[in-house]
Amino acid sequence: MLSWAVIFFVVAIVAAVFGFGGIASASAGIAQVLFFIFVALFVIALIMRLVRRA
Image 1 (tube, rainbow, N blue to C red):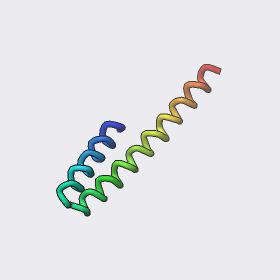
Image 2 (cartoon, rainbow, N blue to C red):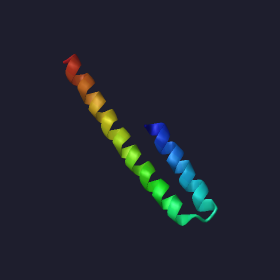
Image 3 (cartoon, rainbow, N blue to C red):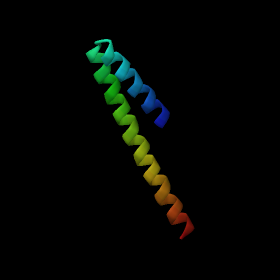
Image 4 (cartoon, rainbow, N blue to C red):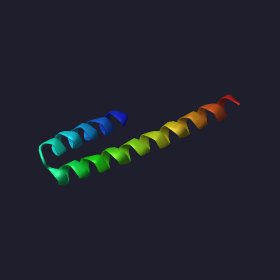
């Protein structure tokens, strides 16, 4: 999931460089959503690991 966020971020940067503002903002938004989903799942996995060991 993190790799998809990075890919969309790179697409947003390339689109912004070439002047495609709409595509750049859409790609940046998708990258942001994917990143926060990744962080949430990562935190849940850490908590589950700590609960399972205790």
